[in-house]
Amino acid sequence: MLSWTSKICKENSREDASFCKGLMNLLFSLHVLYKSPVTLLRDLSQDIHGHLGDIDQDIEMEKTNHFALVNLRTAAPTVCLLVLSQAETVLEEVDWLIIKLKGQLSQETVSEESSSQATLPNRPIEKAIIMQLGTLLTFFHELVQTALPSGSCVDTLLKDLCKMYTILTALVRYYLQVYRNSRGIPKIMEKLVKLSGSHLTPLCYSFISYVQNKKTKSLKHTGGKKKEKAAAVAMAMARVLRETKPIPNLIFAIEQYEKFLIQLSKRSKVNLMQHMKLSTSRDFKIKGNILDMVLREDEEDEHDEDTASEHEGQNKEPAKKKRKKNK
Image (cartoon, rainbow, N blue to C red):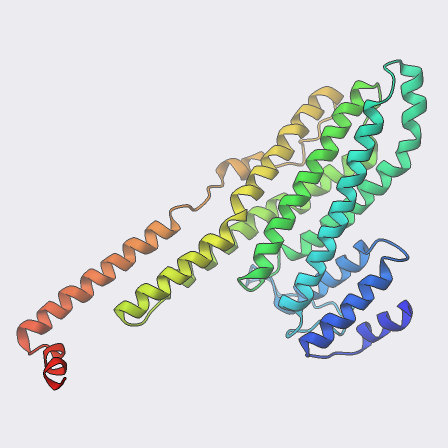
């Protein structure tokens, strides 16, 4: 059944969103019965990226065709929201495993002998967690470079990225606790940290800038008559506030992750920060003045319109008075 469903998704291109959603849901529900869907998520994210293009317009995309069902019509929001929902489920499962490991660690005795004997069986679980997060990281690596349409896809991606960094922080804090029990950091954990510093964090900041610049342009291009423009700007501002709300949370989550990485680096004497570019977050500023800037521009436009109407009023009779007489 899984092979049959997978074959249909890979070989058949359909632009009907409902059909695509139903078939992809079936694929995921069958896939999770056998193994984690993280590799499937990575392949789908590459297809989405290929069809929607890159946030850097100068980059020419090489399209991947893992699944023919993913096309320009279905990539967003249909498939994008489905894969983000599945990624969120995986993150919740990983979070539960980390909490379980922390609980087991806190119950161990202080002695080195009992500690080493009790914690060695946890190594396979730790490895499984890190492997899951590593593949999820490559999934997010694709999506944060994708020119996603404004709305639910961007909002959900920002929230899921925040969860990703929160769980990475939880894993780092677990290893801080592990290190107290005379155990070192596995090499695979060092590789995960390196991957996050080179393939995710810098791209997150680029994606945030892309989202904010897109919102600024959409506000500036809000046109029409004075009353219509005011209503359109108010609606656009509400949408911008809603969609950019997760941005400060994401930046805070990244900074918390880096904060605990520094602590783990000091305790373990392993330089985990060598692949993290702290200057990126320090130089980055949340564009909180975007709305103020647009509002000022709107006020100036209204002032110009009022001034222009006054000059017109001096030269010819106002049309409003004529309409009132007709009533």
